[in-house]
Length: 142
Image 1 (cartoon, rainbow, N blue to C red):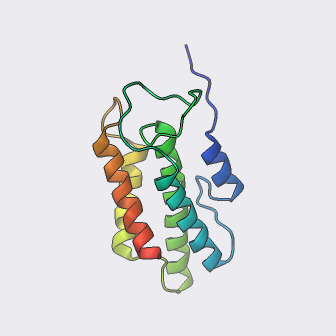
Image 2: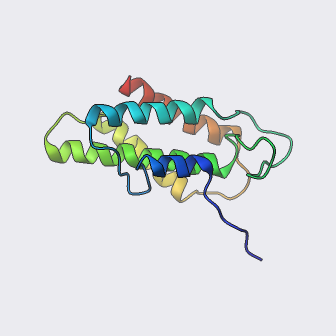
């Protein structure tokens, strides 16, 4: 029947930092930027790349793989926080944290993750695409 659903520890951590699906982030602008960079680097570096020979589950001994849906959910939550900060910057009349071009790319990519065009297992191309977006954001915020 239905699967038991539980939030990954990464999503719980992001929510504790107030970076949730509404994109809420801590109040200080520079702290926000540093927290976003820290989260993006963690998303990129703390998970294994590649496609394992078997499907990885949260209950596995070693669940920290980019191939897992939970990794992509963490990416979506982080992108939401970045987009919210961008919108707040524009509305507040301050220089946005990222360029409009990158904000549009993030918005488009996030939409693709929320409404994936295909079903099936994650491919290396899926991971590479996410990492490309993450790398662009890290470069722009650094």
